[in-house]
Each structure stands twice: as C-alpha cells, then as structure tokens.
Image 1 (tube, rainbow over the protein chains, first blue to last red):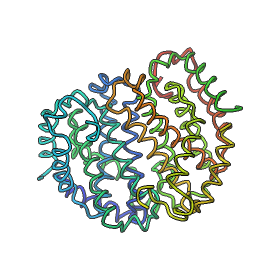
Image 2 (image 1 turned 30 degrees about the vertical axis):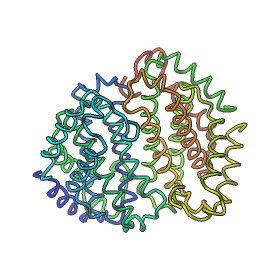
Image 3 (image 1 turned 90 degrees about the vertical axis):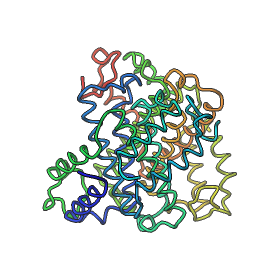
Length: 115
Length: 115
Length: 115
Length: 115
C-alpha cells in the first residue's frame, strides 16, 4: 500500500464488488468509525498509562488491527463527503498552531479555552 | 501535506515543542480518538441517512475538521506504538477479502459471523 | 432489583469481593462506559432507522444486555464521584426546559445554540 | 425525582410536547448516547487515574451533567425498545457472577475469556 490514494481506490473496488455503497451513508460510516475507535479503547481500558506504552505482543497486534479499522472508515467517509484528508490535516496544523502557541501551553494539557 | 509520513514528522515536532509527550500514552490517545470520532457522529446524529449524504456547507466544513482530528490521533497512536498504518491497512484488505467473499455477502451488511 | 440504590449496593459488594476497586478510577470507568455504548451502536449501525424501531428478537435481547452494561458503569462512576443520578436528572430537566422551550423547538432537532 | 419510572414518564411528556418522537429511533438514540458518553471521557482524558478520583469542583459539576445526559438517553432507548432497565441489570448480575467467579478473578481485570 503506497498511500491514502491507493487505499481509497482499492476500497472503492472492494465496496462496489459487494454492493455495499447503499449502506455507506456518512451517518452509518460515522457510527462504524466510533465502534472501531471504542474497540481500540477496550484494549487499553484496564491498563495503566505506563502499561499502555509497552503493550504485550498480542495487545499490540490487536491495536494494529483496530487502527486499520479506524483508518478504513476514515478514508471511506472522507471519500463519500469528497474531503481530502491531507488537506484537512494541513488546515488543522494551522488552527492548532494558533490555538496552542508553544510558549503558552508547554507541559499542560488543557483545552484551548481553558488557558 | 504530501503523505502520512510528513504528517507524522510535523506532528512529532509540534508535540515536542509543547512537551506533550508526557500526556500521549496510547491509553490517553485512544480516549482522545474516541472523543473526536463522537464529535463526527454528533454532526450526523439527527439527520436522516439521505440528508447525511449531502450535508450543507457548514456541516461539511465541520465534518472535515473532525476527520482531521481523528486522523491526527490515529497517526499519533500509530507512532507511539510503532505501527505502520499503511501496512496495517494492507493486512486488513487480506483479512476482509477472506471474511467477506464478494459472491457471498453481496448487498448485505452483516458481521462476518452472521452469514 | 427495586431501584438504583439497590443496584449500587449490590454492585459495591460485587466489586469488593473481586478487589476491583483498584481498577475503578473515574477515568477507567468512563472508558468502559463508552465501550459499552459503542456495543449498543454496533447493533443498529447498518439498520435503517425504521428497522431499528422494531429489531428482531435476537437484536432486542442483545440491546437489553448492552443497556444493562451501560447502566452498570453509569451507576459505578456516579458512586465513585459521589453523584446522585436522580438529582442530576432533575437538574437536567430544568436546564433542558430552559434551553429547549416547546413552542420554539417543536418538530426540529437542532442543538440549542442553532435555533 | 423519585425513580427511573418517574424519569421515563416525565421524559415522555417532554418529548411529546416538542414532537421529538420522530427523531427518536433506537438508531439515533444510540448515537446520541455514545456522544454523551464521550463528553464524559473528554473530562478525564488528560488526567491521571489518581487525578480523576478527586476532580476539582468544576470538573465534578460537568461530570454530573454528562452522567445525567447519558442516563437521559439510556432511559429513552429502553422506553422505545420496551426494555425494563432494572430487570436487565438483574440479569446482568446473574451473568457476571457466572463469568467472573470471585475466587478466580480477584485483583485482576481481564475479559472473562482471558482467564
């Protein structure tokens, strides 16, 4: 897999071959995305933060699968809404640099409106 | 933004400048990911599926922001766990092709163990 | 089960007998709550809204289990934070009546700041 | 607020006065539930577990609001699916006692199929 574009193209074929477009409204895809995100949370929920940094091989393997599942639905929703994920990420960097100036937020994790 | 690799590199610098690594355990990042996924869900929750396919400009703009937020934490967790997202996506295609043979699942949306 | 108070008391004993208090920080319990909420979402994600109103017996049985799981962690977090759920619900009615006056919002489902 | 039954009855009137039943498919309500659960997660996501046990007054107040929001949608879904929450909780105690015998799981937090 070279890049997000190849992922999107192969995904389109995969979905078309199964006639799954009818189920893929952004509403449904957003639900599926949150389900996959929660399956990732489930892996770490009873671990301490320290333990989560160095999960055992089995947990790490499952995390890789869940990350792939999240990416799958993320790319699919973006495709259905005709949104370019890398452009959206670029815009986010600009917003974040403004909301969280390094000298002001260093070492603290608050929401931008709590500083 | 060219690709996921550039996103990861710029993100590393952004986080290091703010000394945020201390907050970025996979456990915390998974929580943040699910929060962003839910903010996407919130945009569509009271819309019909049909309405979600063609959201108005304001909802589409907000969706792009939330997709960027999900991608942000997805790339960050993958980096902390040293997981290659595109490799994980490749492995997922192989699993999915096996679990969901086109001729068997066409036009139905069940979990693989419900067919 | 008579009421939420009995649920809380029996739950305290269940947890104490298993020495699970150590895992039950509000942070961890909030993660567990969101995981259970997503398992409920999973039941309905590929159904139409109409289908979700009248799920088959198996889906309805699974929904009852997931609702019980959500209630379980809800009662547990409230207990750990010493919050009275019914008092909190009473306060919510007051807030909602103010934010969503019937004559203004009838038949529309927007967030209070979108009217 | 005396009990869950009173909450359900007052909620029915609140919803009927606003003509909101049309939006309240179990599918939509499950989405709303997960959104509220994530707003609870957001309060705790960057706190350590220890910090989450003793949140400051403002965070505790917000947690009470989010718990009320989760309870609101939980009661609403149960009503739409004609499920008795306390009966479901009773059944869950029976299942959990079987899946997690005290002498076997004491002091460990694994899923029942990991012991």
